[in-house]
Length: 437
Ligand code: NAD
Image 1 (cartoon, rainbow, N blue to C red):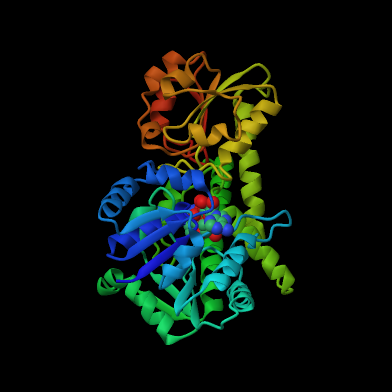
Image 2: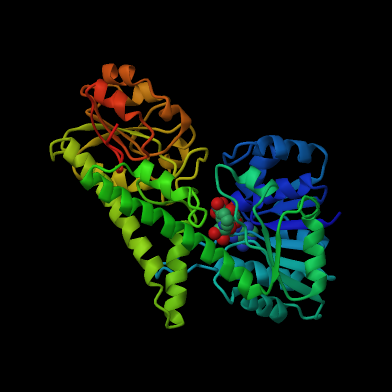
C-alpha cells in the first residue's frame, strides 16, 4: 500500500484517484478548484463517467479516497505524487504546460522526504526534464526523489473501465526504485498480466503523443474514404469492416463521422506538430489529419445547408448530441460547437439536446433553447442533425420523429440511423459515406 497524492482532480485525476484507491492505496485527490473539491466532499461527482460514482463512493466510504484543497500538506504526506493537471492548447498550438510547472515548483518547495514524482498529464517530450529542474530549483534541502512519466490512455466515456483494464501501462523513469514504486501502485494490473512498458522519461512522453496522433490519423483517413464513398455510391461501413478484418489494420477507430474532437486529439496533434517544427521535422501526415478534420466539420455544415435547399435563414434545427462522444458530458472541442456556430451565423435557430451534456454546452452557448429529451428538441423543426452517437439516438423512433418535425429532414453525422427505414419513410437525409441501404 502506498500513500498517493494526485494533483489535479479532473477527468484523469479523479478517475485515477478512484481506481488507485480501489487497488487498496491511500489516495488524496487535490485541486486548486475549491468548488470542485467541495462538490466531491458533498458526494457530488462534477463530471459524468459511467461507473465513477460507485467507485468513488465505495472508496470514499472506506476512507481510502479523500478530496482536499490542501495541496502543500498533501505533498508532504505522500510517497507518490501524480501530476494530473490540464495541459490545454496555447495560442500558438503548443501545449500550455504552465500548470504542470507551477505544480513542480510547489512540489519542490514542499518535498520533505523521498518521493516518486510522476506525471500523468500529457506533456511534450522533454517536459519531464523541465519538471525535475523546477523541482530542483525549489528543493533547497536537496531531498532525494525520483521522477517518472506515466502517460494516461483512458478514453472519456469509458474511463473507469480503461483505467481498471488498460491495454498497457507505460512507465518512463529515472531509477529502478521509481519503477518499483510505480509497479507497486499498479500491482493488481501487474498480477493480471497487463503489459508494462519500462522505458525512459522521453520515450514515455513520446508514446502518448504518437498514440493519439496515430488514432487521429486513422479517423481522418476513414473520413476521407467516407467522403469518397459519398461521391461514388460506395458504402464506407462495408469498406471499414473489410479493412478492419485485416490484422495489420484493425477495426478500431475506424468510424467515419463529423471529425475528431474532445480534450485530447485536437490539442495533442497540434502540439506534436508544433513541437516537431521546433526540431525541424515536418510531421506531414499528422498535419494532413488535422487539415482533414477541419474540412470534415465544414463538410457537415455544407451537407446540412444542402439538405435545407441552401438556406438556413429562419430555419429551426434540432441538434441531437452536444458532447464530443457518447457517455460523456465533455464538450471541449466537440464538433457540435462548429455546427451550432455555423447554423447561428447563417441565420438559423437551434433546439439542443444531449442526454448528459446540456449543462456543459450552456457554458459555451447559454442562449440556445435546450430541451430535456429528443421529442421536445425535434418538435416543429425543419431539420435534425445527429452529432453524438448516444444509444438513445441509435434507436430513434423514426416514424415519431417524422410526425413531430415540420418536415422530415435529417443529417446523421454518426451513421447510426437505419438507411432503409429513412428511405421507406421518405426522409430527406444525408450521412457520412453510407447512403446505400
Ligand atoms: P481537466 O481539465 O478535466 O482537469 C484538470 C484539473 O487540474 C482541474 O480540476 C484544475 O482545476 C486542476 N488544476 C489546474 N492547475 C492546478 C494546480 N496548479 N494545482 C492543482 N490543480 C490544478 O483535465 P483532464 O481532462 O483530466 O486532463 C488532465 C491531463 O491528462 C491533460 O494533460 C490531458 O491532456 C491528459 N489526458 C486527458 C485525457 C482525457 O480523456 N481527459 C486522457 C488522457 C490524458
